[in-house]
Length: 436
Image 1 (cartoon, rainbow, N blue to C red):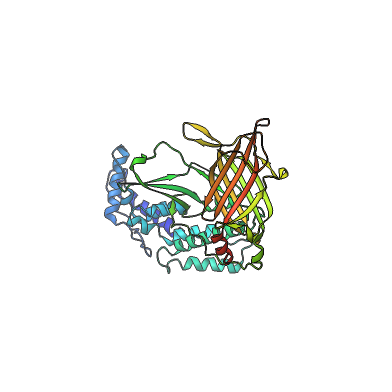
Image 2: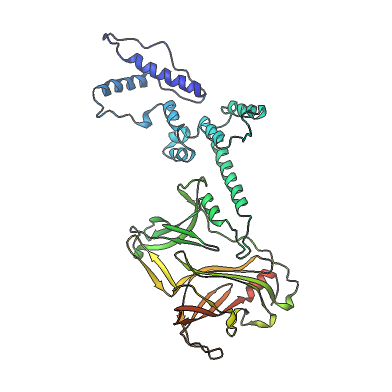
């Protein structure tokens, strides 16, 4: 077919040359070689060829004012141009108009893209006769398929191959967080990104792509900033969307999906409900702008059934009266921010990532949220510290977190002297199918 198209273009060019006057100035009749009509392709008639010939004679004198519209070109020329495009650009070209859509569905173009992307792997230079026969059969069956068949085949297989690669990457799980180890690489391969969709009261939408993205052990930090944001007073809604490109191995225009929903949870059997929770593991990170103030894992956590109070089960991670469990925060805590022009730091604030694993190593409670150190009075029932005391609190539907800290002036650092989790009884009953 490639040879046939080359011969077709050659005949087209010879036809144009036949319409030009010979050097002696005597007109010449068009040659007898006509254009052959192939299956599924419409070709230009002699009237169109004369128009191109006249344009060619005009352009010989001056190229100014002589332009040829793509939409006015014959389909065989456009198909030749489209054959040099990659898959994503070809899809974009198909969105121009109805004519380009049908041209961009050409099976001969897509089977070449398909064969290049998914050619069978061979261990030696010798081609297997079975593979050669299969490829030949596919090429022979191009005209038997409806337009766009090989485009659909390519898209389907491309998505399936990337999903298979992601599934392989996400198999390895961290024993500390219960999350995949190679999350960063998986995000890179999938092309996953995030956008903020701002909708004005007038109905106009603004899609703001993220400016920075960093992947941590148990969270992803995404930063937006720019100069061309709409005014806050004009906005009606704000939506945060995770997006993936059409082909997941390239960073192109993303498409929005529906709201994410957690998979349905099947309650686990609690074989010893009278003993409460046991064998839990907690991983906590406090960070900002790539700087980590805390990164710790606590194992063998437990709480007894008798520790349930006001709808919460108390899980003590760091005991206030046990000095050996107290931990320092590295550096001065602050939440870094920046724009195109300015940057700064919000003192005493940071991002906290928390992952609580149950006795089976499954994530029982996870969150990633900004937290702030707030001044608090010294505890009356605990040891008396020399420095100023602070606390951090977080709450959601799954539970509450309470952390107490002390500022040590001599070393200029914060020490965590108490960390307690209050797990919602409703969450526990939903997770284990119990009735605490």
